Image (cartoon, rainbow, N blue to C red; front, side):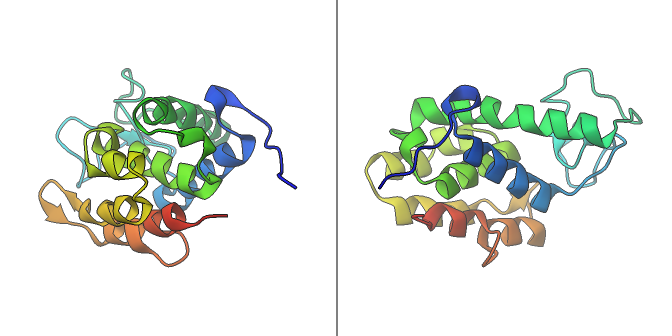
Length: 169
């Protein structure tokens, strides 16, 4: 018997949103004061672990947020970053929830164009799931430097985006 998933924001199931938020929180951690992180590109300000001034154009260094505000902002990111994926990846919303969450996490981290404009989307659309998920491993540089945190995020055996992308359940 097939389980029905409650549809939430943007055609995503509540489970996909919850998995995406959990993955975001696992990799991004939390900072409640907006800062300029050393590995971010010039001009980027970050708060709540990974929300930037690209997400909140008025965000300024030193601006403070509560935990509840961060949770609300993070929850709002998921449908926003999933929307372009729904447009460029065939059957995105019918993929297993873990795969959707992995792709959303990747898109939040690097931007949806890193999926939509790459072999990741082409491979997913052609049914080459393993190749698409493996391609995520190429994206481990920030400002031209290999970051172990990005290597871990892509390939961790439990929380890695690649592992979640490959899951069928």
